[in-house]
Amino acid sequence: MSRTARLFQLMQALRSAAPPVRAESLAQETGVSLRTIYRDIDELRALGAVIEGEAGFGYTLREDAALPPLGFEPDELEALVLGLKEVAEIADPALGKAAMSALSKIRARVPAGQARRLEHAVLSARRFRKPTAPGVDVAALRSAAWEELVVSFAYKDAEGRESERSVKPLGIVYMSDAHVLLAWCLLRRDFRAFRLDRMAELVVSGQSFRPERVPLLREHIAKIRGGYPPAPGKSD
Image 1 (tube, rainbow, N blue to C red):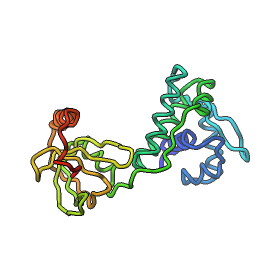
Image 2 (image 1 turned 45 degrees about the horizontal axis):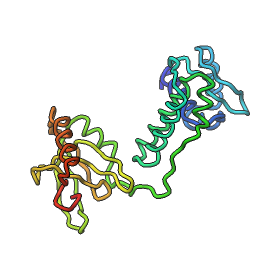
Image 3 (image 1 turned 135 degrees about the vertical axis):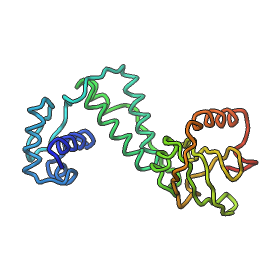
Image 4 (image 1 turned 180 degrees about the horizontal axis):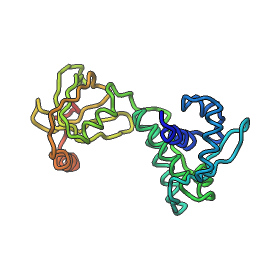
């Protein structure tokens, strides 16, 4: 790993971890020795990053020189915290981790007073009943939707009937008890909604449906809002 890549990885570890973060944890996270962590901390400080703490007590990133400052109103900060923590609670693991990473980056970019307000926000989000775990790699499914690539998967409906589906993935809805894929089903030749916990064996094809995703998604959402069900009486 290059020195630049290593310093970038260390900065991300400092942003993401709950402060103060011990050098041992940083070494484990970045895969380097303690001596390298101490040397890299000094290097980041020389580059302008404001990092408080020392060996044996842990480190806290107060100001990130690589990122310009941001200013938010108090209610905007509360909204950011609440929204990102809600994502962390209900989304798939990859997206939940990304939400907390985004929160740490925002904390590094705001003034010190706002950073403390963000860290100790009045509002938070907790779900005592998590949505059912998806049966497929949701990050791969999101990527296929963005790239507008047809995907295939095995599906089991509410009655336990199994089928093989090929669809044009349009978007994912994070509901209170399940994650749902909105899609154009090539088998049914119609819009369908598929619960991710009933999907398995996801395969991303090389078949592109660009540039259909956005107009199809708009049509699908419009039909749902108009009372058009994804399938007669079922989520299919």
